[in-house]
Length: 367
Ligand SMILES: C[S@@+](CC[C@H](N)C(=O)[O-])C[C@H]1O[C@@H](n2cnc3c(N)ncnc32)[C@H](O)[C@@H]1O
Ligand code: SF4
Image (cartoon, rainbow, N blue to C red; front, side):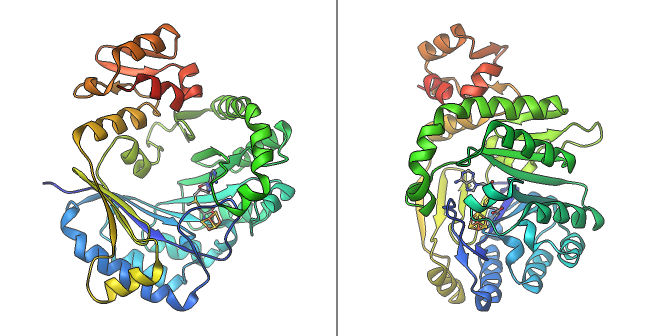
């Protein structure tokens, strides 16, 4: 086995839990940051044999990785195996000139900033700590520290967000000239406070979301960005491929190792998810044991179906060699007849219309 070339590390700490979020997060706990970084490094050591000698990507996701006590975050980054792309997620209000420089010096090459929206009243609906100027300031601090690969996350479909609010958000984001943008439809995650408070409103506005999605794509491609994945856009640069290399590995069905609470790994025919419980995780690793995990055996059929579902999110044709058995020939003929997908050679792609309909089309295609 040559080993996985992609490493995900979960840093769960946040200043505040946003109502709409169902990621594995822990509020505050400054006293535990050090112990958590120790545990992450111990888990990495235990699993190092699953990784290739040379990594392509490392991704620090959260939670809010940049809320982790800075000396601990730097200690973690400095202990990681080198990789061609090292990304960290960051919340705008945490990005000071000192933090930006420390990330750069510790080898981070890409920062993904959670902007979400630039409208103050919508930021309040999302219970975000950052204001619009924090987002702008964060980008400037990162640029000053030498970052030339910055991504902004936006969400649309926030209760009360009009089409002109969305247009203004896209303009504000474009004015910062990010190399990459992720634009997600706000999802009502079951069991969150947000869904309790706003679920009905989200249901009422659901019909408008296809139009919002089309506006996002039209505006960003009109500004010269490549719509390379359903929700992801990058600047086109002759010298560099600015797609998110780490996420691309997920969409291409590559193996990856995830460490930290709640982290998922997929390696060959196995997938596992670490316990989301901080105490249990720390306890296990302090004793030199792997944390408790939920295991899911993956057979070839499951991986082939995932390969189709994820691969068709991309703007490049999906080679069908070895995947035919995952497709339903009748469903395939139907979506082709409807002009939602097309085959060329032995590869399949969704048409523009098919990409807007996304998952619904893929479900039709699967055996
Ligand atoms: C791991 S999350 C959070 C990263 C960072 N802590 C932040 O809040 O900006 C990464 C991204 O997922 C998106 N996200 C989180 N919850 C979502 C939801 N309920 N629906 C849609 N997108 C969501 C946000 O755009 C967010 O920036
Ligand atoms: S800061 Fe990010 S990860 Fe933390 S609760 Fe808010 S959305 Fe979730």
